Each structure stands twice: as C-alpha cells, then as structure tokens.
Image (tube, rainbow, N blue to C red):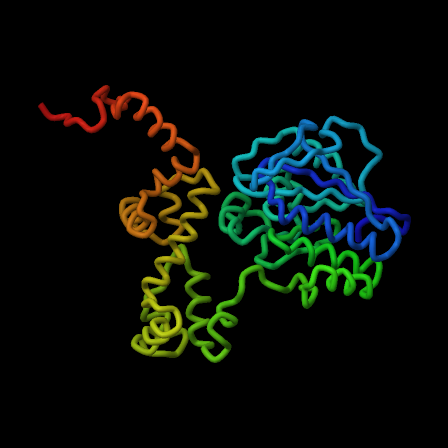
Length: 353
C-alpha cells in the first residue's frame, strides 16, 4: 500500500514529454475524488518534470509542474511515471537518476501507460512483475528481455505499481484505495466515475476474442491464441487445424464467417501488426524485425508490409522520425529537385547515359 498509517499519502507524478493526458487524469482524479468523498485529505500530490518546465502532453496541452528533479524535497510515499507516445525515444538521464534515488523499501515506484519504459531503463523493475500499454508490449519485451511483462490491466508487485494507459489507472488506484481505506469508499468513487465495476489486476487490457465473437466459438478463439503465441515461427494451417481438432476447411469457414478473412490472412496481419510495433518503438534492424515476426527475408517482409500499409517499412520508420516530411519540404524548396547524396545525381533522373 502507498504510505503509512499517517495521512496524507504524498504522491509525485513525474511527467515526461508527450505523456498521455487521459492516463494522468485518471490517476489524479481518483485521488481527488477519494479526498472529496472521504471528507479528508487522504492523498496529496506534486507534479514534477526533469527541468521544472511545463510538459506538453500527446494532445498538445501543456501542464505546469511544481519543480524539477534537482529540487530537494521532503520525500514521497509514491512516485508514478506518466508516459505516453514515443517514450522509447526519450533520453532522460536526470529522470533516471532521480528515480533511482527514490528506490527505497518504503517508497512505491510506479508507472501509468508507457511509464514502465523509464522504470525499466532505470533498472527499477528487475525482479518485479510489471505491465505496460498493450501497443508497447512486444517492443518492451524485446528491449528488456529480463523483465516479466504481463498483458494484464495493472500489476501490483510489492512496492511496484504499473498499469496500462487509458482508464486503467482508475482501477489500479481504486484497488489501492480499497486496500487502504475500505471497499465502501472505492465503490463510491466508482459511482462518481459512472463505471459499473472496479476491474482487478487479472483483467486483460484488450477485449478477448471470445467477447467479440461470443463464447460459442472456442475452436476459433483457440486457433487465434495459437497464432498470437507463435509469431516468430508461424504454424502452418495444417498444424493449426490439428491442434484445434478441426479440418482445414472447417477452420477456414469459421474465420470467414466470424472474422471475414481466411486464416492465413488473419495470421499475416497479426505478424505485420507486431512488426509495425517493433518498427516504430525500437531501433531493431529491419532484418531482425522480419525474422522476429516470422518472415523468411527482409525483402519478403518489405513487400508484405508495403502491400498492407502502402509504405515500405524503412519509409515508415523515417516518416515516424519526421525525415520524410523534411525531405519533401527540401524537395519543394528546390523546385522538386533533391540531390541524391550517394550519387550526386538529382532524384527523378536516370543514372544511365
């Protein structure tokens, strides 16, 4: 639990650039409503950034903070790192060192949305079970293979609190309120937020396939689960059919009826989705991404990727880094001519003579 018997529990929210506003608000508002409904100051909070400057969220809204990491404070019962988009690109040595300085038995270190990335970089999740937003699961597991990263909604492991984005912080902190101040207060907070129940840490982040297609198709759900578990070494359709106890034709009919595609197409899209996450969230070479997602070669991967997303993986990565927009601006500034630095021949002209 956060804090001791003494009130209030003091929580620091460490905001990183492009943090998720909904995840941060979900956490903060749960504490605020707990104070209002109890009639006591159960929790107080302080907002912190690396340089004491306002931090811009992923929605473009900037939030003022109380101080930076160089401020000498009187201590926190908990620190929650509020992450968001592109946190894998964040270089924050000051934040990493500041988090490490608060690694104490009596202090909870936690994260919302993608904040687990920063805790992992600080080596503060080693030996703990943790989670992160589902879009970042694959890349986090690749970058931090020593960690146990679950797909659950949130994880509370001793003095480490981590959760997915969106409204997941509400559930994690209502669990904290329930454990420390009783279930009645947690239920009243739930009513204020107009949520029908407090989800627990055994709830998955993504809606299970069985909830989307109904529980009457366990064979289809089993086949999809096998696909998701075998991305690097894809199973053949015959192998899938054998393991779920159906013929190829029966399995194809199930996929066509409930998912509107053939099994091979669904499997390919799963692998490409995983590849896109690794492409945009890690610095892994494209050939390594191709192999990690079950493609026999980088050219084969590039063709499949371009056919699905209309852009080659290399250009996808460059576009995410802003390089394609920059090149387009330079091309426009030069009247449509942009020199090829490798050959000094203007792009769009032939190299043949």
